[in-house]
Image 1: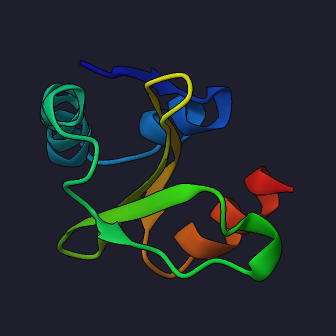
Image 2 (image 1 turned 180 degrees about the vertical axis):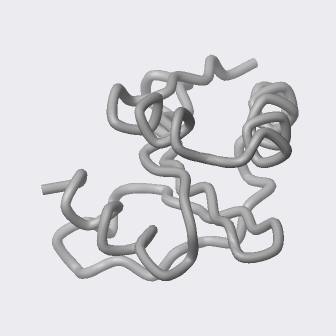
Length: 94
């Protein structure tokens, strides 16, 4: 069973989100511990193809995470509104 970790920046993201979205994220953590492949796979540039990164959606909000099989760990990278989430994700992977 994989462990799930919130990257520090994702923790800060949670503080700025509506309560129902925070509750949704907490529910997802339990689901990700059981199955890290529940999200929709993200297309990444060739330099990052070895990462397994996914997104999950709820309304206008997204949760973006990466699964590292060698460590059996899910890293939640970013949580936020769809208008800004992918830019946050790209910056945090650099």
